[in-house]
Image (cartoon, rainbow, N blue to C red):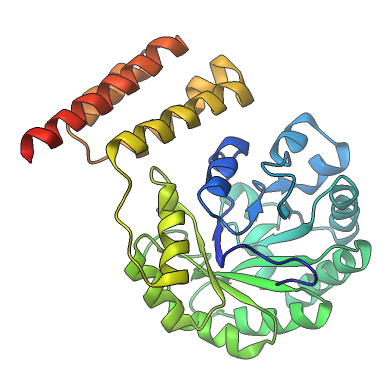
Amino acid sequence: MIGELVFDAPVFLAPMSGVTDLPFRRLARQLGAGLETSEMIACREAIQRSAVSRKKAARANHNAAMAVQLAGHDPDIMAEAAKICADEGADIIDLNFGCPAKKVVGKQSGSALMRDERHAARILEAVVSAVDVPVTLKMRTGWDDANRNAPALAYIAQECGIRLVTVHGRTRAQRYRGQADWRFIRRVKQAVRIPVVANGDITSLEDVRRCLEQSGADGVMIGRGACGRPWFIRQAVRFLATGVADPAPSLAEQSHIVLDHFDAMLEHHGLHRGLRNFRKHISWYSNGLKNSARFRSHVYALDRADRVRTAIGDFYAAAMDDMADAA
């Protein structure tokens, strides 16, 4: 719970640029994700009310809470962007202090903000003061191994009025290398009274269990673990609620999910961009299935939606036949 907002489940989908667009967020919601968060939006884009920012901030479910994630460096600009997003319907403003991308860090945004706690506090205070909705924070454990200041920054955030902190268990220097340090997240949990959500390397139900056990966090945020298998969110939600480890859905259900996702991508992005953007998802969905490399090569060369749909259907039908033969 954040203020008056109650989440359906302590399992959130991580915002991932170029991945968690409206169709993916809608799918995650249908599969039980407790919170919908937009892709990262640059504050200047939000202020300009650009078509890109509006598309990123589109809601998947008008009856459930949505967070808009903002990235920036200037406290006044971030506050203005937050107010615009809140006025346009965001239930939560999430501030990005964790993105490790060079182009973001080079603008002194994202995880670069963890290097200057005083400046970070000015941003947090400005945004919290500018909006009436809850403000949350996503960050890493620190800039590098010598500067893992997430506990201190989380306490500062709490005192500035931040209502929840999500911690990715790596430093910025690690990017996505090495292993997420869930035990370190426990230090953050111990430093604050507000809820803490753990993120990083959560790709199995055993990971969910161990992450919460080691971190003491109030919930988990799943990112790359949901790519190509968004049903993992549903499995995690049920596991935390009941202790039951459900198997992955049947190939027939997976096929329906993939095709529904594909249709939603075309509707949201249009034919050309939808086909192009769906390629990464096709790669993830088909990974590990027989003849997946040949299937991907074939699909990538298609430029008609009906042919792609047929290819997807044929691929999963063949996979189901192989499974039946093996049984």
